Image 1 (cartoon, rainbow, N blue to C red):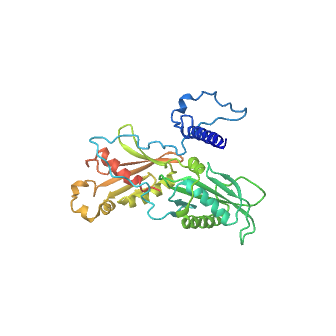
Image 2: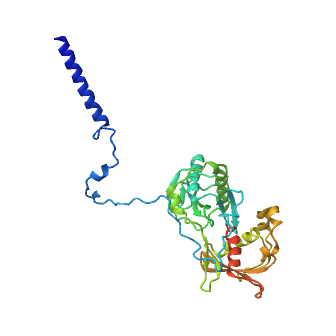
Image 3: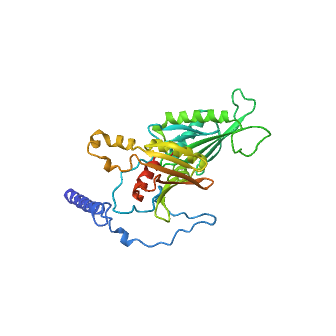
Length: 349
């Protein structure tokens, strides 16, 4: 009798064991191959969005920027040497620029990195954020008591896309509290306070540049891929379009020419004209001593030539920059112009 009971228990255990293995490893088991399951999936109706809500499709986080240079070089194609994205920035991450009474900080990182660092600066300084618009790149403080001043002040930080891709500009606007709330002025009520605040936030950005986080909202809202592009005119000649007012474009071009191996021999601001001599010194330095042994002057036919560079306003915030030989009899094709304009383009900030 005992033997019969033991045999029944063993048979039952074997049956359960076999069923368990099938449940785990069989065609219907837990660890079955699911690669073909999608073929048996049922088609369901689209999800109904509740009234008052919007359906936004999935999209790329990083938007592909438009192509700036919309032309092909004329003649036989040669692969050009790459132009630095911001050749004029050098090793300085943050530089304060000044033109007349206006000053701003030129920062060698994208706006999406500057935005959270400005917020960190305000938090570390004990300033409260009264308004923040990441897409517009604007951050404003509450009224603050400034040491040694009778009136309270508040400040507006405005982050803009820099001239070159991957750079930013930071502008600080100050307003004094007089007669209650009022719209922000065009220029600071106290330029000295604004300049001091700009120096403070610039130093903070320079000290924390290596650990800057990124705000994707600010990056998408502010960044536009740079404010300078090389275009082609109706006659096939190349020129630069720079989205800056004339006064600032004129000053920026002067600095860029010196960085791009040009000697300025004369200038006429009333007509927007620079007279320059191309020396090619920076180009030779980049090639190095060894490469210079194998390169002759024939490889750089434009060295020692004089050119006229003209700046013309096309709107209140945009200019064109055109280049031509000073001597009309000098051999000059559009490819030469493109090479020189590319050098200038990479150094404008």
